[in-house]
Image 1 (cartoon, one colour):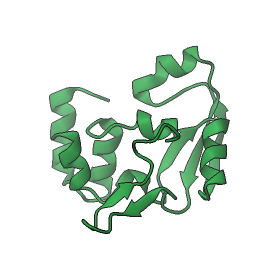
Image 2 (cartoon, helix red, strand yellow):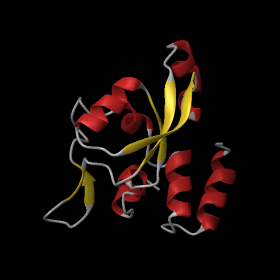
Image 3 (cartoon, one colour):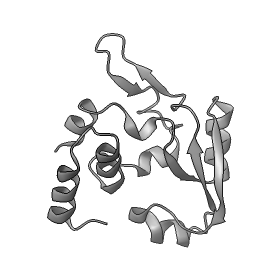
Length: 133
């Protein structure tokens, strides 16, 4: 599926309460200053999302695992379409975690399956087809 199609058929599952993410101190400050309610669930480690492990390790970026207690503060309903959208998607201030999380990648496909947006078979087929883990 194309990125646009994935997002339009989704309920913004990646931006909802209960999602865990790896954030550095700058990202935590940005999100909490905007009103995000985050809870740390793991102390720092030098690692990143699977797709960016080497980049994050090389940068020595210490990240901690957080869970969103509430939906993302930047998730807003488009008044014209009724679709949930990121209100800062195209802005440079958008947190790096959002840029690293790509539609159609492992995390996206997994969250869609967990939240019942796609049946589990879609995730399994995608995983077998792409060999991405």
